[in-house]
Image (cartoon, rainbow, N blue to C red; front, side, top):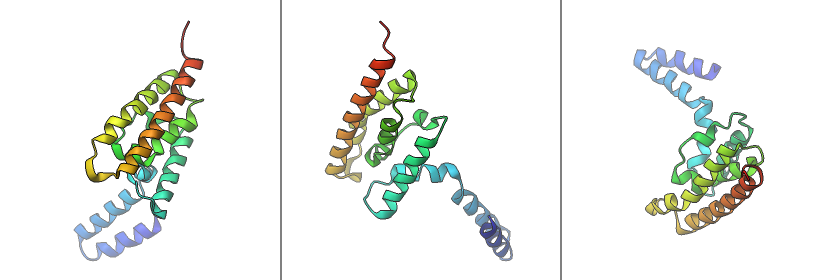
Length: 150
């Protein structure tokens, strides 16, 4: 935060508004929530995007509360694969309700992906739909194994 403080102090010399803008930029840039979800919308295969997706997946898998399960996904989140891989990684730890939610999410991914138009390539949509199908089947098997009542 010392860099942000120095930027704020320097900017404050140029006026109150500039100082407030610098403070807002530092607050937004250091928000763990924003940084922890940066990979969800990153769908290209650039090194920066891959790094963001890996960091987001790591954060989601390490999140003990699994708050991400209850967040509304975007088509880009499906295309990035991060949410689906998180479900795949955590399936043995998910509650029955979370497994149901994940299965529903995987099942609706195809419809969501089809709605994006030109924002994604046909190859991205196809890969994501295949991953969603695979994850949906895995979540269903886990649900059947642990949650179905006789």
